[in-house]
Length: 142
Image (cartoon, rainbow, N blue to C red):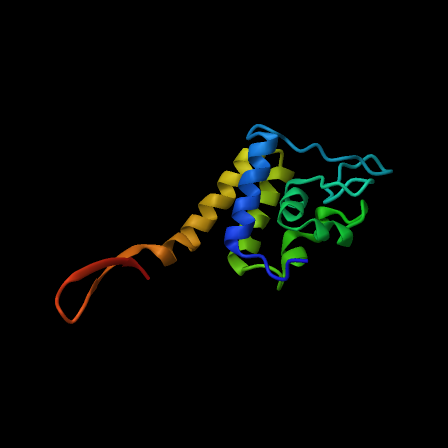
């Protein structure tokens, strides 16, 4: 099983999942015995169900062995990915989860994830100019 999820891994998987399902896809939460809609990571047959479940399966199908249908998203992405993913990924994935759970499309969830990642990680990779001792200017990423 993948030991640690990088931003690149999660972002690529998220984009692939949304491309496959479509930006306009809306997750419908199955109802529990009390009739309450509950987000869940996997279905009764072990297939991915919600957005985060699909993304984790896309990264590594072994994640599915850790979930049962009663393992609801109430546990939260933060608890699920704690110490398993870069902190920025955990925060951004939580925003995507909230967007889905509040009725947003998977495209809207992905956009919210991307916007957060860009605001946090994008700031770390802004091009800069480096002046060397021979006074030439080199462009690069720091």
